[in-house]
Amino acid sequence: MLAALLASCTPVISKGVLKEVERGITVDMVQKDPAAFTGRKTLWGGVIIASENLENFTRIEVLETGLAWDLTPHTEDYGASKGRFLIDATGYLDTAIFKKGKKLTTAGTVNGIIVKKIGKMDYAYPIITPIEMRLFEPPPLPPPSIFYLQTPY
Image (cartoon, rainbow, N blue to C red; front, top):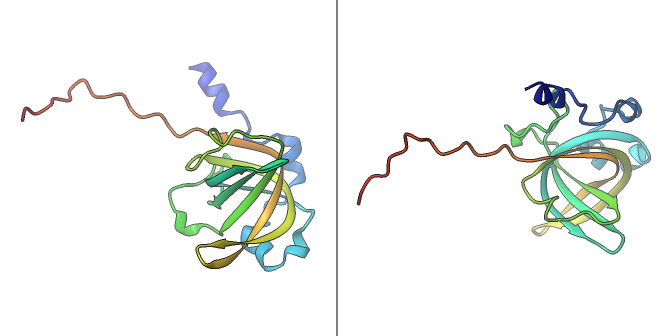
């Protein structure tokens, strides 16, 4: 029980990196004026939409959800999202681990935007080069109830 308590106190992103980020920078602010934010460090979180391995980096597409007090992504209200962003992580990250539906928090440097299609619409994705990332596993399913009775056919 003590180990679980101590683990819950472990910071999601290191204190040193947190001192460098500007928490007020949002996805929609970067979309509106990418030049004003390029090179600045921010802290964002959300839910992975997709990930792919490219030649020298792994690109992760994320639906921003905002962060809770403990810097974990909110997932209760997707309607409050400021938009989507991309994480371009140097090297190889396994897309079976960084897969759709998992939550993550990242501190990183804004590297402008890239315009890609969502359906037939052009969408300006802010690009983040991560300094630190934290991936969150979905909560485990509860064990089956011992009181569950199967109804005969």
